[in-house]
Image (tube, rainbow, N blue to C red; front, top):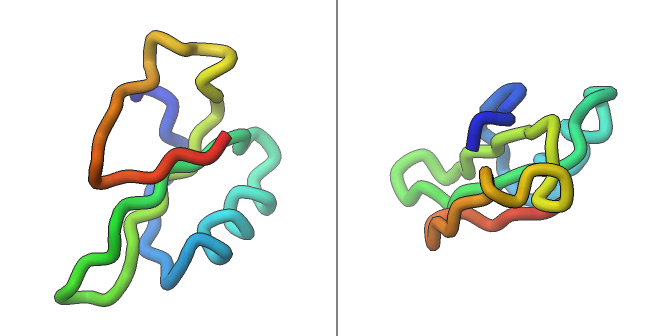
Length: 67
């Protein structure tokens, strides 16, 4: 929470990770379970990790976190 740079729709985790690599200050991501209507995932690119701001990491069963 409080560290999202951008949120974009993606087709899969690989695309979400690639988008993170393209942004210099992206150090972690959250990817939401696939939306059955659109067939895409919401990809949130973050400028912090759980190691830097552990108190901002919140459990949400709809998202997968990758630091």
